[in-house]
Length: 180
Image (tube, rainbow, N blue to C red):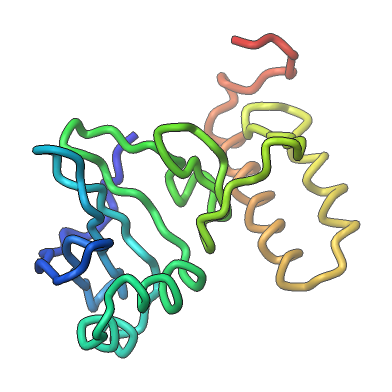
């Protein structure tokens, strides 16, 4: 899964035990953060989205990059992991799923905004756009939502599912419960 829409961001090394380098793409308001790698492998790079230039400037000027990141970036901005040297991204593309991703190679589902995984004892139900019943389920859910901001987010997912169905009729199917 590649991230072909991600801007190329030059990274500058920083003095930190938790962060290797940072960079910023002003046009897209994207903050890039590289974390320490293991051995000879470079660390993972994450893009944090819709970060104001003032936040990047404050990050650069901060005495402790790790503390600033933990307080002002990680809990406040959606992120997308960038492909590693092998070209592989562990996670869901932002366009595919805007709220959640798989947070690391362990495959746990995490909230993009705060990086917290869904607890192992909490059931999860996933709808796929190729499921012919998914849009109806999303519409029913949308009707039950009372928060207008959440309702708008659900409507965006309904729109994306409908667009997929309209352009991928050959991929639509009745769901099953097979593991494959």
